[in-house]
Length: 233
Length: 233
Figure 1 (cartoon, each protein chain N blue to C red):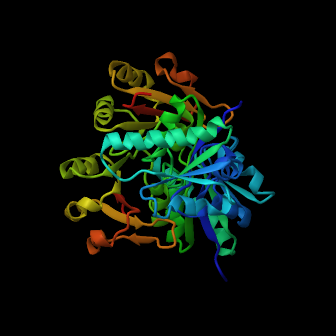
Figure 2: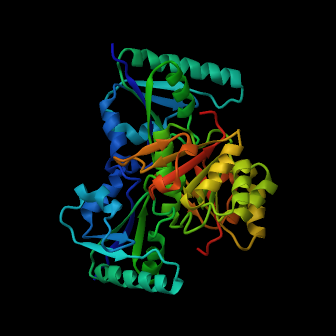
């Protein structure tokens, strides 16, 4: 019997209009929608983005708690791969939806490897990364001409961050709330840089902060991105 | 009289199916399509991507030769802004189309500033950046967990490139043909990295090179992206 295909689909940052035609075509064509979740009772932002395009298709929830026990995580991923390949073996196509782009800090990559190793075909459909939507909404360029960009998931070493700010024209921080006060100090001490935070980008609750000194870590949602630029804005 | 709006629209890397719903909605709604070109007799890749969505709308070509004379370039941009604002003043909406994303190495940013300074409203619609499509097609992750990414437009200083390769988990090179032989040497000498080139990504002529030592600079098209990763692939 033919086997199904697993698609890793980037659904973009939040606005359903930022879905690509290709993502929608595949979402409409597949048999099963797979949704990663950190808690089983939590709403999925990704699922909310695609809800108009999946009719009443069966949804399988893959729960990966935010833990750092690698063995437990591996076991969770293996269980997820076993579940997904049950459908693929049955010639059903599965679309795994992921916020932003599947190749940038997405959990899809772990599942992808396991499913390929089990002998199945997978395909990745790119999505708008959150930082591109943030720069568009904040109306700032991430790079022009010969400028360089660095993307740092969580800035924990402040000396390293200072080095990166010096070396790159633009620094994008994906998760920064833990060290927010230290980052604010770095930004306020360096007069040649500007920092902008975009929270819940392209969602109804979007906020853009152009003076980060005025805000507190506790006020920011999980979906916050900081762009540090040397450009006059 | 009401004024028109200038939209900077990212049309993605090449495959028209990677257009977003929002891009298509705006392309269908605007009055004028503006297309940047480096030569007036050259075909526009961006225009080819959107051709099914613009009917017979008037197209204005904005020619910006690839020159380094800043004064001449500024004069070209000012002329383009004058032309675009003629339509905006007449309450016509203009969509400026740009490959990839408008905030990453796009010419839109220059026009955007000038048009805003002339008192008009502009909006940026993000697009799939070429490197996200390249990683999807090559099936490699750009970053997982705490990994960092750097994006370098043209690697001219090889010592700097070696430093970046050491400091970052993934290095993306946008234009690298000029120094390709030196980059090949760096890659062949460092056993902990892999380099992949995706040429004409998502276009009909797409090619993926997983052994860059076998190829020559002259064989690569302008639309080539190199991803240097430390991951086992």
